[in-house]
Image 1 (tube, rainbow, N blue to C red):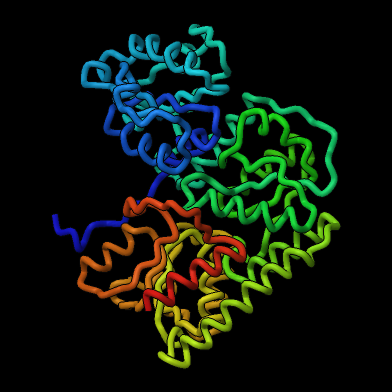
Image 2: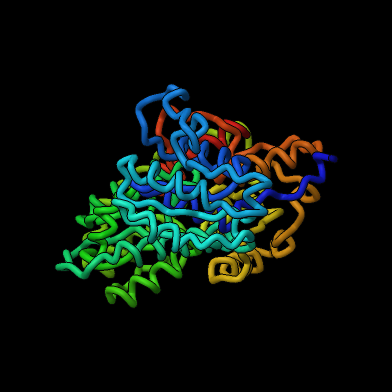
Length: 427
């Protein structure tokens, strides 16, 4: 295989469904599928949200776990694809249910979905001591975000959270997943900025939350969207269930100074909170970066004029492209998003048109030969395999396996400073 022409690997709805459930601290995915579908998802879930103390793989050497603490699997083989997975499902369900989880989701792999095993029947007959849902088809041809949202809604339908006394100036964060790069740092940064404004976060749906928090989400006054493409179906469901209104940022995720300020101003305007404490923190970060950028620019002339490519979700691509162009004077030569049929993608195209850079929209990044590439490590590596000496800033998964000891963020004021540090040092 010619690695230079390797097609883009994009996580699909199957991965989205698994990460939605694995993003709940006390929930577990039981994968009805072969080990080939298990190991990647088990490794990513454990890396993104570690939940166990023991690092000894022998501790998880029992059947179905294969040395990994996450995503136990029925390890389907050719016999199972012909005769069904009844025996293995009957054995594995009680084992997983007795691990102390508050929720279990049985998720079919693409191949297992073809067998036609009735997962609902198995669950009903098992008499499990914990709530259990069956995700028979995760939307294998759909996007990660679509599979993620469907799984979140299924989990909420089973848990059936009840309306509660609404707490003023409180929100649920919707549209953040453990598959987002530096998700924990992003969550902590956003909670910090909101807390400065006197706004309480009830839960971050399926991003480090617990089942108890999800059952209490009806107490939030509003649903506050972080990444729009990960939230539109969920917020519609919550509106129908609880009558909760949603706060949706027009500028995309709070990435960069301008988008973060707009995000904070909007939520404070809607909730009646005081935005000034958080705005002061953002202004201080902006001032700090301005001083460093001025010094760097006087010595090198950079980053102004450096070209860049962006390959990520629309809610990230829109604020990132605007920020790089307006704050750093960098020039977009390739901008691509996984989903081009939403308001953020439309806003991005309008912005490119306004700055006379419309040719960058969906331009092949290899042909554009950018100085800096923003995207997954796969996207960056593919450009380098084609001989481009590109600077890579990984802002999404799949990653390269780099292990972070210090928590990092891509969103908020702290995220803006982190991205600036990466860009300037690489340039």
